[in-house]
Image 1 (cartoon, rainbow, N blue to C red):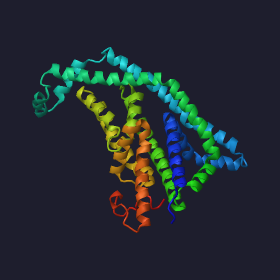
Image 2: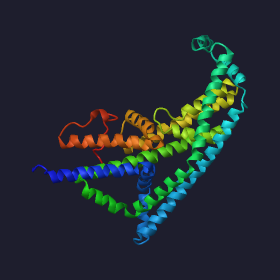
Image 3: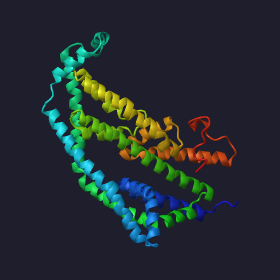
Image 4: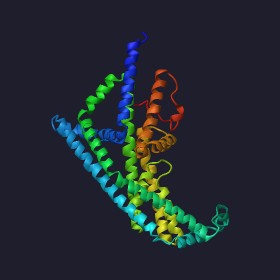
Length: 368
């Protein structure tokens, strides 16, 4: 193979620099671009069906697909966000005006503890009721401050939110209309072989669909059940806690138990034994089982990643990219496994045995 000359090297350097500059230019709206691509992938079957029944009118089909996304995703999401901000403000006001009796709550919590646990309290500087009350008020104060800050940031970021939403919908229309031709152009200009390019395209689409559809369905079901349970049991801020449970359910091995378990403990400590037992039963036998039953077929089958990889990549993605990280993290992990699987196939080496979730499971990416 002839070595590249100075002109070819300069051209590749120019391409790299321009591409990096273009990516840097899109960074302020990377979330809008990301979700436009995600919605285009998820609603692609609808777009193809509309093109077929409209006799090839791609513009009209794309407009109807965007309208469907607005009705199914944007409007319900905006309504939930507005209600969440209002309820978060209400909860913060109740906490800041101290409508709850912290001393009574602390006394009940201390009396409900087993004797050996009460004997250990001095080791944590919680030997007196005043210490317990002070620690409890501190925790609730920090929580209320976080809630208020997030609610305020939602209001302050309204303009940016609408701009990002407009960019997302604008891009979504052209992705619906020009998606197939754009994908074909990327395939033709890709420096990778056609086999590698098609494999990575397939893996990207599979991971996006499995991660978003699977995780969002699981989160919505768990959050809805938890929120309805909180509302039925008379717990303040049912919508807020339901949304929080839905968000936490996106994180493997953590889940909605971080919300319903402390709430059930509070009910038991405060003497509301029936409500506490009911919430505990719903959390263990309904919310917990939903995750165990739905996650393997909806998420695991599409990503073909073991649980520990999904956990680490999701937490890393959330840490680096915020809420978008629950998609970006597993996507990067899946593409990492897929690329190394392709490399192993090309060189006839055993492929990443440590990435298999089980002995009889196919290697991630080899079936892409």
